[in-house]
Image 1 (cartoon, rainbow, N blue to C red):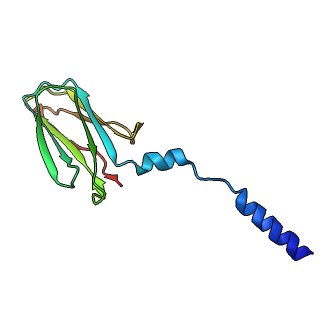
Image 2: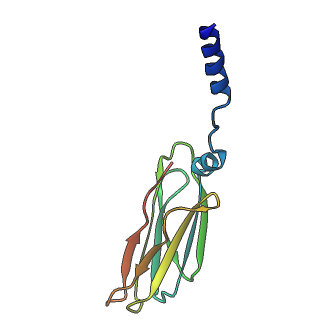
Image 3: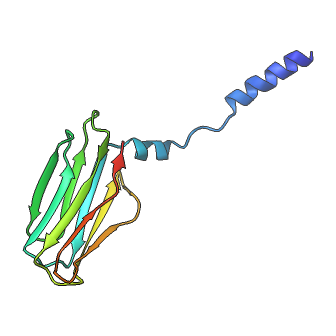
Length: 129
């Protein structure tokens, strides 16, 4: 009798266990990243380098802020990165990069501040799929 009670308890525990949080799974499973670059940098040479949908690299000159890009990465791409650089600006000017996966901001915004020569280079943390 004790064995039957133990088996029934084990089976009921199996079916009543907590389920995974599907919301987090959906966010973490998203292969779409949205990049947003804002700021007051006035230099003439602002360049964004980022991983493309197929895993290559693209360098794009930005003429005006804000700049936005949404990329859905192919299944063979294991990670994505983005970096921004600028020169010709004024010391203290900034750009801020925000990365969203799904509708959720990843980490903290990446802020790049122009140095005394009016330039900067800053990479955001790598996003791993």
